[in-house]
Image (cartoon, rainbow, N blue to C red; front, side, top):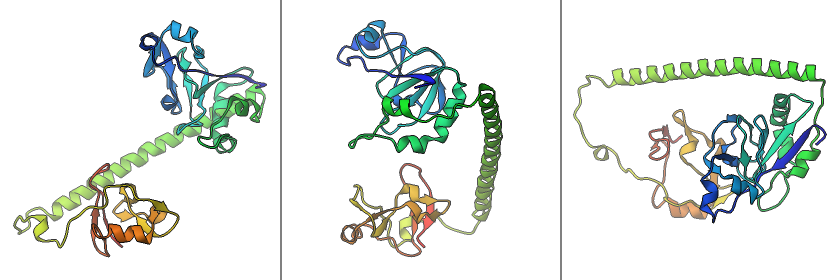
Length: 268
């Protein structure tokens, strides 16, 4: 609080639909994603601002999500805008706003450890106001920001190069497979005619446990393998109920059929 003014927004009465037919941008926490906000999903009227706790924050303000799944996410306002109560605005002075932005990004874990509440832990204005901040001379702040952005730029270029390489590898993989199955002496049959069984798993979410039998989902199938490092577990009893429908065994092929479709793995 010694280097900024912190304030949160508010939500106009949803029962009055006229409040949401204005031209004043209204930011929700889900719109914060380390970006610059120049437009919003919803807009409110001046009357909505007058009769709610919503406030107009100036362009350049740093926004941070206070609670929910987006807690700790940040964005800069590229326009004057209002926010809901799940978003706080930090208007800094005496400091480079990007220096504050990068420091909070670096300290996110420390900030999240200060969340309060049980049902839905959140960051409060009180937590933000008392959060320790390293106030370096402005010249040093500018130098740090410049160096961070220089290195981030190099990192993004490396990521682009890596993405291009991965795309090339995937293209070569497809070419190899296409050549392997081109002009082979074969006849077309249905897959069920040459397999013992084709079935899918449970259609409901089971009760997870801390240990037991691995429960595999789409996200666990990567690069032709099953990644067991983050799989959830189910109890032996739940497993006994599920294997009546689907019981993957060594050598069976798994294929994803919803979400990310077509990922394959052989049960190891």
